[in-house]
Structures are given as structure tokens and as C-alpha cells.
Image 1 (cartoon, rainbow, N blue to C red):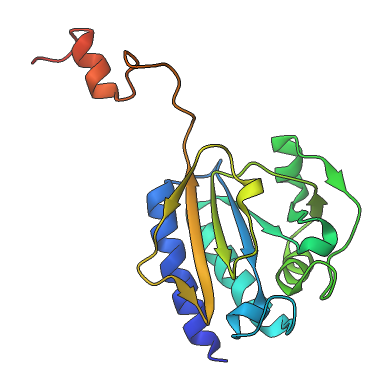
Image 2: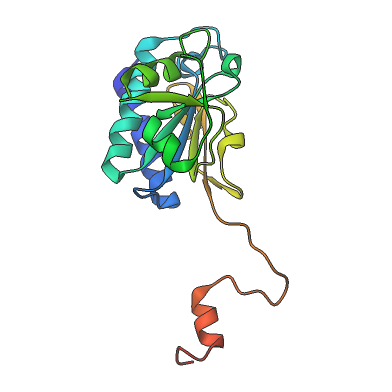
Length: 193
């Protein structure tokens, strides 16, 4: 497994996602990843802490650059709970649950994230502003409504398929509703025609 290529591909995907999602210091990125899929195997069949470290290190490094928080999703054996810093969980009002992810019950990525994060905890669910799913791990339940797909130029990390999304607030109203601030200003007579 070429870990440098994995890091490079993941960095490129994250760069595109961060640009599309406009995440900032208050933003939350949810990450789901299968190390088995990255290595070209079926999800849950070839867990690798080495690949998990490469993924976690890359995500945390890139997120630190923009100041957003990260939540790493566990596998189905921990009900897709998430690892994140306790301070983020408390600030956002997330319910903490008791477990420690390990390979085989949580997954390599979540296990590495739990070990590496300062004061990590596990929460049952989050509502993130953006997400990256490496290996079809199904992160959609942890995104705010409304999820909008972000199509990466290269939709793979290692041999795993990548899906990404940003979110936006739901649009309300009907035919007369205005969603564009420039149009609203024009209708209010605040901008010249």
C-alpha cells in the first residue's frame, strides 16, 4: 500500500470539500473510512492501523489548517457512534456514550482517532456541516439537512470509493420566496437596478 499516495489523494479530496463547504472554526467535518476498502478489500475484512493512522493524521492536519473540528465515525459494531474531542461534544450539546473503539469493534480509523485526540470521547450522533466517506461507510445520518453532493475530481483514496457532501439550510417558502441576498436587496430598493 502506497501510503504517500493515500495521503496525497485524501488531501486533494479534503481541499475540494473544504472549498465547497466553506468550513471555518465553528464547522464540523464527519469522516467515515474503511481501511479495508482503501487497501482494495471488502469493508471490515482487512483492518489496518497503519492505513488508519495515515488517514487520521491527514484529516487532522488538514482540518487544523482551517480550524474546523472533526468527528470520526465508528463502524456498525458501535452503532456508527463518533469520536471527537469532548470540548466539541459539550459545546455542540452531543450525548456522550461509553465505549472505546478498537479494530474489530469501532474500526481502525476510529480507534486511531480516539487514541490520538486530546480528551476524546464517543457520542451517539452529530450534525456535521460537511462529510467525507471513504469506502462507502454511510455517513449521511451524521450530516445536517440538507446534504449537497460535492464531486471530487478523483473520487478515490487508495482503492476506496469517495463520496463527499456539504450541507445547507433547508429552503422554506414557495414561489414568492427569495433565497439570494442580491435579489432581496434589489427588491428592497437597496441596490441600483
